[in-house]
Image 1 (cartoon, helix red, strand yellow):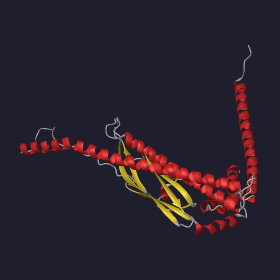
Image 2 (spheres, rainbow, N blue to C red):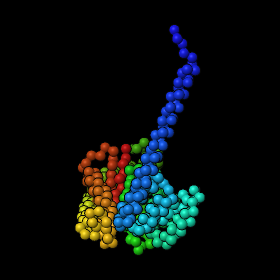
Image 3 (cartoon, rainbow, N blue to C red):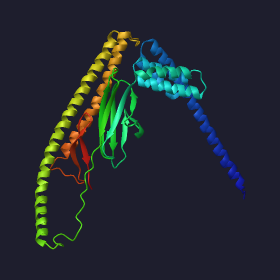
Image 4 (cartoon, rainbow, N blue to C red):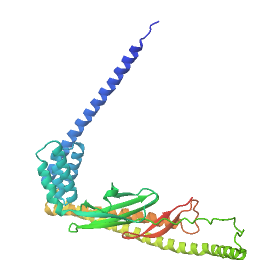
Length: 357
């Protein structure tokens, strides 16, 4: 019978491991080469877009090229492209990225990137996120246009591009969405997040079991217990009536906001499509070469499309709130004790969703 030395199996295992590692390195090199080739194609396409006056398309291609193969040159081109289309904050941030990368590589273009960023500082627009109210039980998550905003940045001026922006705040089951519009001529704007006030938890009375008076005046204790029982018996009816009216007004308000948001989104969507079609009918030819008027129409269409998207998001959020308020109206079952109550928020009226188990 043939026997195998333990070293035979060890050698075979090491060979397989080395073969797998070599294959992984080869795959990584192949992917890197593919990304570099694609980045080069996008870079050339972006430069062609600039020659044809398609600055918005050029910025998208430069950004993807930079993502695939970060470099000082493509970062400088992207920053310049953002500045052309009026995205000053994006241009300022991209020039700073180019400066940091150039200094890391000891590239002489670091000073150029620094000067370009410094020249934009006086033109920046800012958005301030102000948080007011007691700290919630669950961690508060704040996002600006889908990007996380660290707590140390709350209350500070955040550079943003002119246009529409969306701020979201969430802590457990509580959440809010805010829209903010910044004109190119405006210096700054502020979004205020009003945190809900936690409900007070009543402390049960400390003493002997109900019905047993421990003081010397049993008549006084009996009278206090009777008045408390009467108040408790009449309280729920008034509370249900007031809650029903609040929910009704909340449902109507959120429904109105939903209709307004969806209507505004539809109108701006139609306007964006119209301006895009106008650019295609004359100022821009079949090869997507646009004159100055054509580029202006396309930029206007892009802004209107952004407003349309934000309006639709706000409308859908308000619609969801109206449906929730209607579903939780008096008479509906709520096994977990869900309640909705109106609460003032930045820019209008919102609702607080509470639950008890």
